Image (cartoon, rainbow, N blue to C red; front, side, top):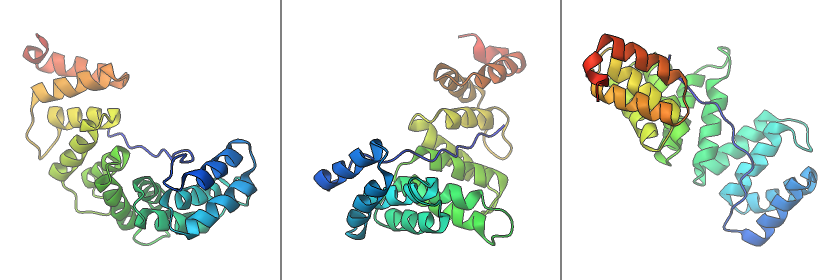
Length: 213
């Protein structure tokens, strides 16, 4: 069971353009979405990546405006190109979840997940790993999948910790390492991933020596 993450984040509340940005955030938090959008839009046009992200988010969620995914994707892309890893991640999520009538949507998801992973977004690295594991949008490659799962796991991503453990325990085409599997199952369990308990029991039944310490 490989776990993906499709969380679209809440509005960003920090920006280098602090005073005007802070006012926009305050309007948003008060439910004045149109005023917030107008204020973010001014900063977004000036190249503020966080403001561009927030404009995208407002359109994506239909806050104070009619939901418009085309506008959302346009502004997510601007934000991603301005350096926002979270915007790149959200684009990856959108493209991944498109139906089969959209050609090359998996390839586009891979592109944006890869950019987000470069920016340190652990959820993007986890999802990119899953794409390599499943061969969606990329050539199937369990070694690359493990690399990206490890990248996310090292940042504390609990789903990735579980996925790393699963590959080390029973993955095909990767060096099996029961001790590393055990350690990552324990990390995931300690972090609150209850599913890890089932796999730990299975691992300990198959390889009791691993669980003696």
